Image 1: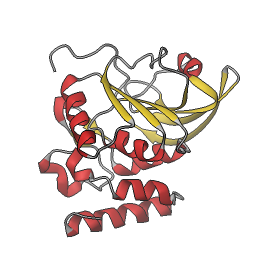
Image 2 (image 1 turned 90 degrees about the vertical axis):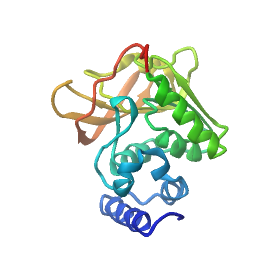
Image 3 (image 1 turned 30 degrees about the horizontal axis):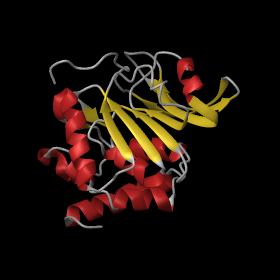
Image 4 (image 1 turned 45 degrees about the vertical axis):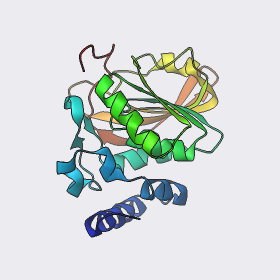
Length: 217
């Protein structure tokens, strides 16, 4: 891993935390190690790039701590043949990680500024299998499906059954579900027929999934 001693130490501590929680995917760790996380967050937060805390980014938004990002991406069970929909691009970091593990990625973001910055970062990494698009992702991308995997970085109030139609058979959706004000549960939803088989694995407090796109920023 390139970067400062602090970054290398932070990444080592992150891996230890993940292994303590039973996450030991060599492919995931390799993808995260070679993707310069500090390049995806504002300069003043680089010292906590590998902490488990949320980090503020542009447009008044924030990205999740690396621990939660790793847990949710690991739950996708990605392979190189998968088509993935991501809702909530943010800085673009998770799109980059998913792009290293999957075949094709469509990542949707409400804010134009975040969309443009994420595109620049991924272009800088030479990642041609990831498409970043400013769009309303509250209903997914039905015209683009089916997807093998869907991941959403904002909370649904209830089971997102409209996303089931956008998953291929046996597909997986990872998303927080719960009240706007309060604790939500990250759920792994595996499509079986037209229904989901649900497994819960983490408690979070994330913003509710917004509708529409930002007109000004």
